[in-house]
Amino acid sequence: MDAATLTDRYVDAAMRTVPEKQREDLAAELQASIADQVDARIEGGEAPEAAERAVLTDLGDPDKLAAGYTGRILHLIGPRYYLDWWRLLKLLLWTVPACAAFGIALGQLISGAPVGTVIWQALFGAGQTILHVCFWTTLVFVLLERTGHETMDPSTWTPDRLPEPRQSGARITDLVGSLVWLAIIAGAVIWDSILGLTYLDGQWTPFLDPALWPWWIVGLFALLVAVAAVNVAVYRRGAWTYRLATLHGILDLIGAGGALFLLANGRLVNPDVVAAIARTGGADLPHILGALLAVGIAGIALWDAIDAFLRARRAA
Image (tube, rainbow, N blue to C red; front, side):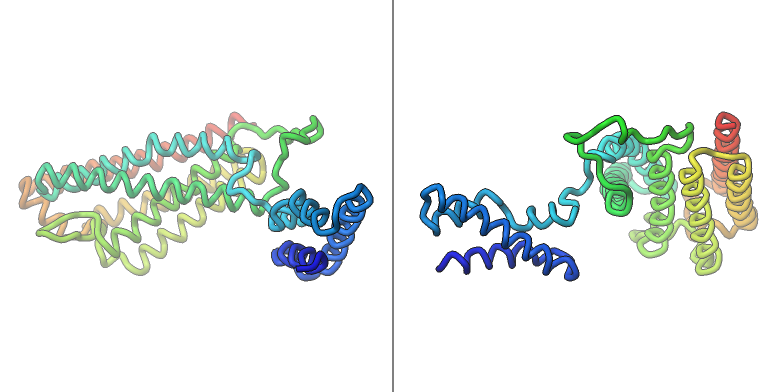
């Protein structure tokens, strides 16, 4: 193989991942750079073939070289977002799987499942939740890495690269955490519809009333999207405002009001699940659990709305 062919092969490999409109100029530049380095080595007494091989070896992997030319990211999450990703992931892993395991275990106990089944399903659900939390949290940060500003390189850091301070309540971890929670809620609803979250009579049964599809569930998804948009607006603005907090509170009121309306009219929980609860614990048990569910829905919505207004007041 002659020297020109080896160089051509290297240049061709390097240009495969370069955008087409840049390819011709960068290929010519790289070809000239290799030729200059080879000539310098030949003038130093090296044989042409050995000089060319040494130059190409020093240049390294052509894909890495091309990434350097185009600024293409070769890591999943870089130093700009790594610490935020790791802190948020640890927080979610400490809380979300435990909540999921508790909810699944409660559903299993209500349905009268054996203790072994309760434990197994709780552990299995917690494991599935861990996978989802890791995947979706990482995916959000990967998208931020690819669509945001250029990744900060610690080796070339200067004080000029310090970010502008953001007010409390507008951190990237707050935004990603809220988006991950909303994604988990949407995923749980879809999972319940397709596979079911309650084990009854030897098979998985949806916990929510199947009659809620499609309009009520579509409305829920639209509400989740609206909540996500408010959280994105808070982050882009840099802080909570009373207007955004009011809008967030209205969305909380709509969500809680809709859920309580359905619960009061016996249309929120699958009738088969309600009947199974009554068979297991008596006719009063569904009413008790319904009351607890109503208190939980109202409490979560109220806490979420108050928290938004407290953040807005601190920012003001």
